[in-house]
Image (tube, rainbow, N blue to C red):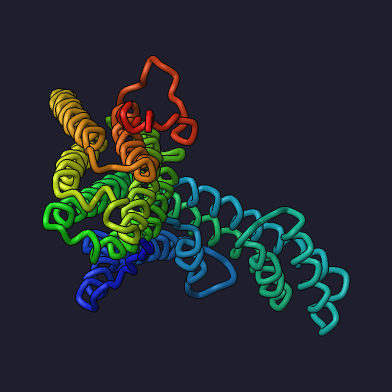
Length: 414
């Protein structure tokens, strides 16, 4: 008999749901961005005014209003304390270098068009040689300002206002800069909810018998998880940067290393879910006699495993961000229970697949592939518990030998 290949057609409604579920930003992300912007505006405004008020009563030569002090403070203050310290060092070095360069050239040539060009070129050359980064333009700018005035008072005033603005920026860095772990923790939990939601959607579709139409949508959602992982990685980098040289980080219950390890595990989970969705999408193109998902009992068994894994992923996200020791132990015990339940469901699914008398030899690679993906999902969640270091050496998920689903002996003997 001729073999017919079933082509999968995704309805417009399913496609619309996939597009709607691939929103690029979550409400948590938008809220944190709004809060961060408001905090930045308030911090910069207070710091600039503070620098101005400090410099105002001082007898600074060269200017009626010490406007360079708040200007320097605005340029010095950064998101993290480490970046603020680095910016302050670069800014002071750039201003002092520019002032000294202008004094040397003013004594030699005065202010002319060619001395101006020479000052700019020399300032940029020295700035790049000192590796001043974003503050490299401060060298020629400071040199031009001092060269135009050609007075020692202007040079002293420039350095003094820069020092005051830098000091104000450093004080603001120590006072206002705090660790940004909460956005990273919420990003981890959001990613776990998305992974769990996709597994639950796949389970519901399998139980309802709509895998033929929905498998393409599942695969599209699984592919979109890479963008979510990049956003979580950005949040973790900001958290790690906010803790560098920050004394407040010493009082934290755990370090971002735990969150980084959790993200690595969740990234492996996302890749495995995508491959699992790919396998189910490929199975929909097979004839019914070669498609293991054509059996309603197999679909229900696979749906039961996926639901248990979805609950496990949600518990894993809560465990990764839990600070209380007692609550952490309860969540770890809950995670173990869900992993054991998922294992039991998977064993029943394996027995069901092996006992199918209608299954031919051509179906066994796909059946074994499905079981292998489920094994990998459970393995990563069980061997990478947040806050606990396994005594056994962790094997890479890429080197994990997939479990093979062996067909009954009667099929092998045929």
